[in-house]
Image (cartoon, rainbow, N blue to C red; front, side, top):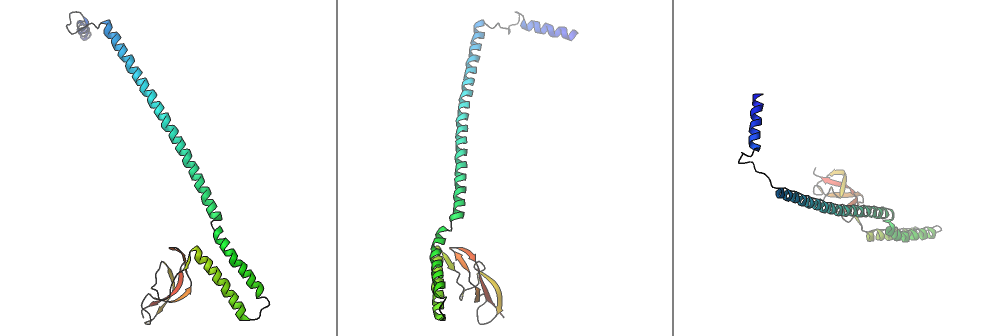
Length: 195
């Protein structure tokens, strides 16, 4: 209790007129402080409004960008589907001519007994189909006297021999094909190995 009385006395001394540090705040200072607070509040409110407007602008830009990207993605998907569905169109148009010739050759050899005529018709149609495929970009993988390349060839046999250098292709068992740099089907080959 005694401590509480001492604290009260100290507090009263600090507040009293005898305290040289206790100053009375004039009313004009209080109104000036209020005005400064109001001005600061106004600046903060303006700043918040400005930031909200900027956020709305950026948000709208984001929404537009997201919509544009979504439209782009849908367009790309449609184009991809169309390419998959109709991508072979030009190839098939070129192959139709070869099919017409196959039909003509078939009709012309029905009553023919000469094997050479049938052989010539077959060779003509084969050449036409092969030419169409070459124009499209199909290439036969070369194997004659080549060194075995696992990227282009598939070794299905290995023959021990001293007649050929090691890893040289001795024989092609099935032709391989590529389109540009892409192997569509590797050549099946017989490869020489040392005895």
